[in-house]
Length: 74
Image (cartoon, rainbow, N blue to C red; front, side, top):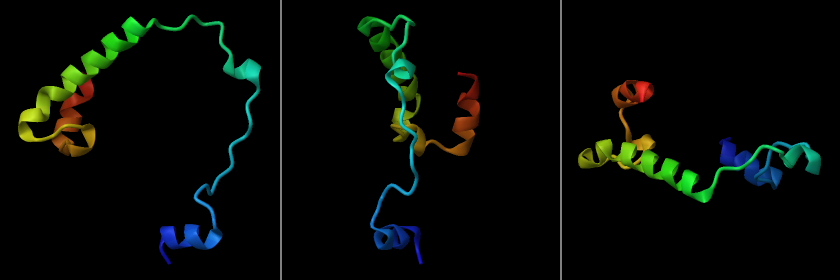
């Protein structure tokens, strides 16, 4: 029986439970980054990803193992 079949038979797609969190644990006193800072990081990551676009690889899942190992220093 496949994993998907077991999920269907079990009647759930959430086979694990997550403990509830308290608000005080979610609320943080650490200042958040401004939107401009977040956008700058996103743009940097997108520019890095363009390294392999010419080879038809547009996301990490398309990368070859050698490319992933070489990118570890990035």
